[in-house]
Amino acid sequence: MVDIPINVEVDCSNGPCGRSKHVIVNPIIHKVTHLVVEDRRFPGESTRLVPAEKVADMTPNRIRLACTWEELVTLEPFVTTRYVKVPRPLYPGGLFAGDEYTFDAYTEPYVLYDDDLKPIPEVHVPTGEVDIHRGMKVEATDGKIGQVEALVVEPENWDITHLTLQEGHFWGKREIAVPISAVDRVAEDTIYLKLDKQEVESLPSVPLKR
Image (tube, rainbow, N blue to C red; front, top):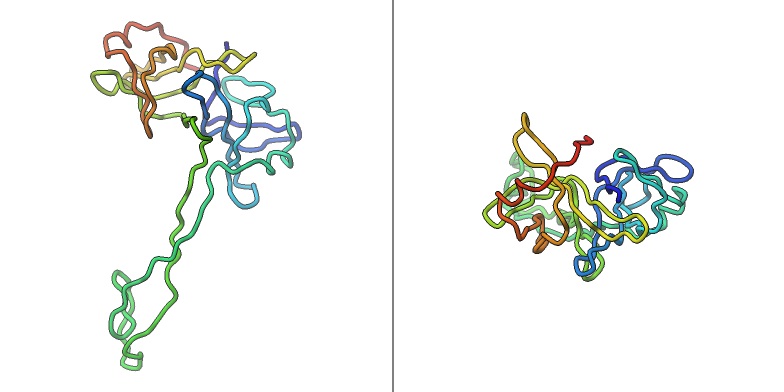
């Protein structure tokens, strides 16, 4: 078994190519299907959806891909941005709500400006799959218990066996291995477990790597 580290450096075969930001999983068969890599140098959008089979090797602090940076660029973006026009309310003399324009006696009674363009990010998760990222909240049946640190998989087939959960206060944190069978559902930014807090506390600890 091996941890899939989240928010660590990623290398392509010809050099550094960003950081891992998300893991995409199929919740029905408990299998990792993609990683999300972010690199501000990518042309256009800064993220790419990377099929799991392109991962060559992983350590707790780094992921190595079996492709070049140039090949990575051609993959589908995970987040795309579209822009929508947002009308700005007009006031006599060209004043806009919330803007710091000074009224000028020479200004026309009504001054028209182009509409504002508002960026709307759109996340592309393959149909039927879910997005897991580091820091995602984890809730037991009786309340919040911690946050996601990593996923543990069988490297031969990318089957998920556990998620590692960091719980406790800053001065007493420990990392717990939660069997994937204990996950009830994933909804938005939270993973819900079938266990209560006491049952989670009784699970074995794993060494903190970060």
